[in-house]
Image 1 (cartoon, helix red, strand yellow):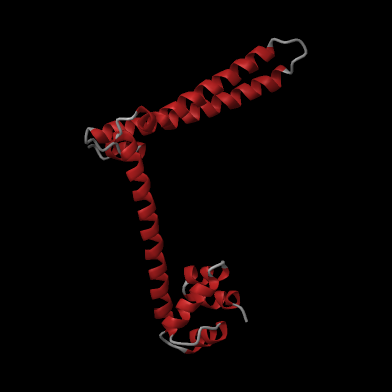
Image 2 (image 1 turned 30 degrees about the vertical axis):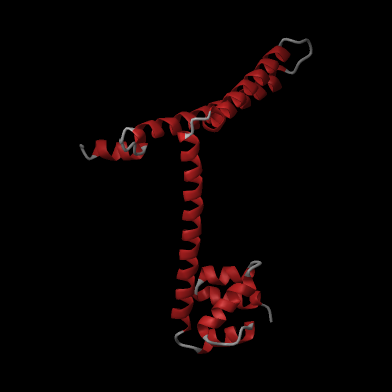
Length: 181
C-alpha cells in the first residue's frame, strides 16, 4: 500500500491533507497524519485508524488547519519580502536601483514601437499580405495598451496611497453611488 492509496480516505474528511498525500511530499504528510493519529507511520495503519478511531475526523481537520496556516504564513513571508525589496528600490538614491523598472518599461514600449513601425513599413511593400499585417499590428497594439493600462493603474494607486487616499475599486464606487454616499 502507498500513501496515495490512503489519500482518498483521508480526503473525504480533510481534502487538503488528502490531496497532499498524492504529491511528492506524500510520505512526509503521511508521517504527520500517523503521528497525530498515534499510529505507526505506514499507509495501512493510517487507513485503519481513520476508519476505526471516532476522533480521527477532528484530528485530520486539525492537521488540515495547520497546513493552511503554514501555507498562509509562507505566502505572507514571501509577499513581505517582495514588498521590502520594492520599498528599498523606491527609496534608493541610486538611479540604477530605483529606475530599472521604468527603464524596462521604456525599453518594452520602444521595442513595440519598432515592431509596429516595421509592420506598417511592410504593408507598403509589393506583394505583402495586408490583412495578416494589420492583424499583427492589432495584436501588438493590444499588448502595448494592456501593459500601459496596467502600469497606469499601478502608478495611480501608488500615488493615491502616498497621499493617504484609499482608491477602492470601480465596483466600490458603484456601490457607494447606489447607496447614495
